[in-house]
Each structure stands twice: as C-alpha cells, then as structure tokens.
Amino acid sequence: MGLGTDELRHLTGASVPDGINVTMATADSRRVRPGGLFAALKGVRSDGHDFARQAAAKGATAILGGRKGVSIFEGVPYIYSADPRRNFAMIAHRLAGDPTRA
Image (cartoon, rainbow, N blue to C red; front, side):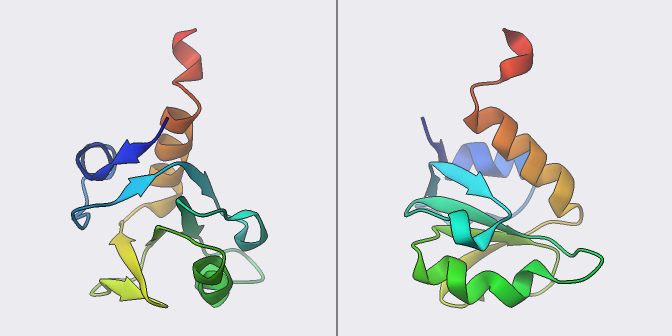
C-alpha cells in the first residue's frame, strides 16, 4: 500500500509535488528504503535535517519537515508542515492500514 500526492495533500494540508508515491515512512535515516518518506524532525540533541542527505542516498521519495520556503532538500521533494510530528504520525498510521479501525 502506498500514499500518492492527493492523499498526502489531504493528510498534511501541505503543498505536495505531483507524482509523489510513498510506500513507507520513518524518522530514522538509516531505515529509509526506496519509495520512503523521511521525516526530518527536530529533537533535543539533533535535527533530522542533518540526516536528510543519508535518507536521499537511500532512496527517499520525499522529506517531511518544518522549514518554510523549501521545495527541494538534498535533491528530494520537500513537504513543508507547520506540525511535522503530527503529520508524520498521520502518514505512518495510514501506511499501517489505519490500525485504529480494526
């Protein structure tokens, strides 16, 4: 199961470039697979944006983060969100098949 541009727009309320299809989502750049969305989240000790190059090299289809005015980051389409943690959770939940509906 994957999420296309329209569903990502619906879930995030963000401007998502056409042609995006996400098959998995992670905030750990070491776990990105081709077709994956990398959530570049800011933490207490590090900023996920510092690991975006590694995610891009592993085949990330898109990067989700909170930096305004960015459309491409490390050569990968960037999805800006005012609340990237919330949007990451919503995307992961949908990719898992909406487990709360089970």
